[in-house]
Amino acid sequence: MRAHLGDRLVIESPTTGAARRDGEIVGVHHEDGTPPYDVCWSDTNEVTLVFPGPDAHIRHLEHGQPGATRESQPVMGEAGAVSPALAAPPSGAANAGDIGRRVAAERRRQGVTREETARRARISLNYLTYLEEQPADPTLATLIGLAGALGTTVAALRGGGIDLPPGQGHALLHPQLQDLGPNECRTLLSTHGVGRVAVSASDGPPAVVPVNYEVIDDAIVFRTASGSVPAAAADKEVAFEVDHVDDALSQGWSVLAVGLASTVTDPDAVRRLAQDAHTRPWAGGERETWVSIRPTSLTGRRITSADQ
Image (cartoon, rainbow, N blue to C red; front, side, top):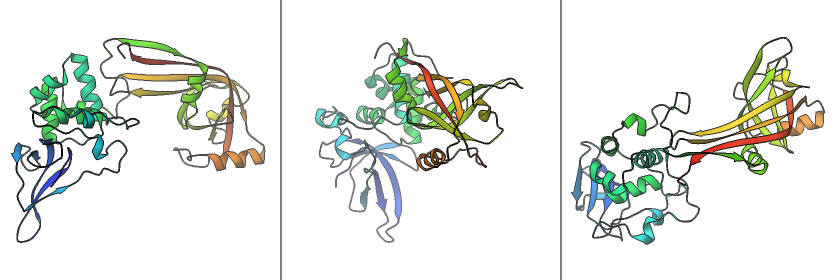
């Protein structure tokens, strides 16, 4: 029997074969993944040292996800130290999940080491390393322990304010505001997503409207309904803004493009835009008027930690 952090230990009834008890493996004591294991039981949220018997089997975590390969998961050696060859994420591994990033950010904000955090939360140091570096789904008991250790709440670690406007978390201890060059602005802008177009209508107040956009042939394009506020951008110099706010790390960036907007009328061009579009407008309805913005100015800023 071999297991890895995040796998589940299932104990079955010897008569029916149905699961009697299961729990998440939060500690592995041997580098080859053999027993015993520290198991957080789903029915009690208690962590116990388990030597599995013949009625137990391992339900492996889904390792097909990027960054969740068995080789990349940290395991615990005999003395409780992380094996260097297995603890470090491989080159190109996916980023940690949001819960792990929030834990790491709060821990660094308070100046607390991983070792001290693991001790306070009464969890394995190796599991905390795994949680901070790989996508993971910790149990409620683990989250309660981490929240208590860091003086925060389970809801905060889970991103409980996801429905609130971004940017309400703690600011970085040492924030750094950087100006972005045109090439980096183009790179950040070139993905499709949601941006905001600022329009000054001739017969109404100025407005800032979110739109689904694409970047095709260096032009920002979006489709809207005829007569709508975004459609009023045509034949005017407008501003278009796109940003990303990382609440887990209190970081983010924004890019501002300024240029002349125009309505796309050529049938072949409209057909091509429709074919190349990644998604239809989230607002739904008939939105077949394409507006194109050719940026004459690209500026941007990024907030990072000066300690990075």
